[in-house]
Image (cartoon, rainbow, N blue to C red; front, side, top):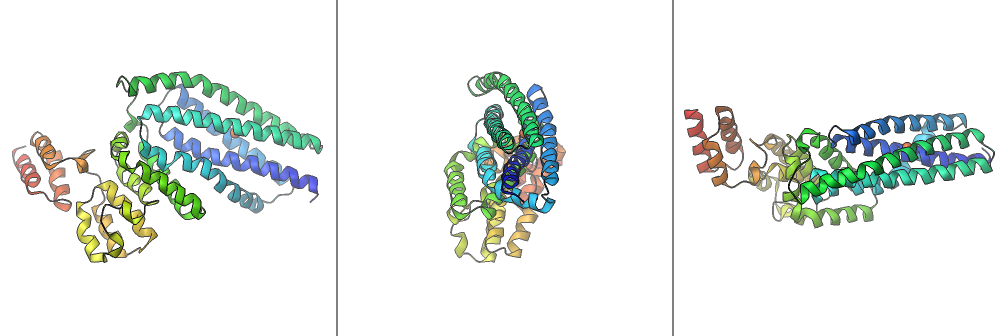
Length: 355
Ligand SMILES: [Fe+2]
């Protein structure tokens, strides 16, 4: 391969890797976006982005780059982009807080930044191709850039409305939508995956930074993740996200590393679903002991209602008094397996008997 082809391939590869990284970012954003004009825009651009990736791949193939080489080029570049995109938007976003409305606004701003990066990437690719007399690639770059410019303009049109919604929610308490309806589980899972990738795949320094950032927000995490917690499964995912970057001091069990498996198993029932997820992720990265992982598995499952794990016995007892049969049974069964507080169990039994 000539030096000029090499250079074009390098720039094509970069554009291709950027598009692939954007596919996963868009999927995560779509999962937390309610139906409406902004959601439609993201849906459409996901299709566009996939087609762009395909087209770049075909052009690389025409230039004699085999699939395996395209993929390996992607790997290196994606881990770099991952630090910017996935790490910037993943677990840390999830924990940092702000309502769903603010999250959407932040997503839209990040998407604008990504589009600007893509536009510049295609500017460079086009000019490199022109200089090296590769008209086909130059044309492809120009077409893709037009699509990115359209997306950037459309995103910017959405931002004033998203900002108004954020003010209405944060300042005046008027929610524009219920985030439990828009796939927060999926978003949390994506976040957990990003966190695991960050913890396992990145160089030590980046993982350490992620860890520090995650630890910094732990204090506010309880408050801020409540929105998402209304959805089944989201607590475990949030815990996994935190555990993937946790160090011993962050764990809900003191002196974790110096306890034996039996001592840890004994303490697990007192933990919330989020904490179980956190210990699970930590244990998998360290001792990976079967007895602990199995016990966590047996304790994992949705609490009777969102926020149950954080409530006091009094709060639960007063709600369970008016609970229907189904909810009272859920409380009884869950409480038996977890904290087994006497007052809660008695209140639940009474509610089951009378409903
Ligand atoms: Fe694109």
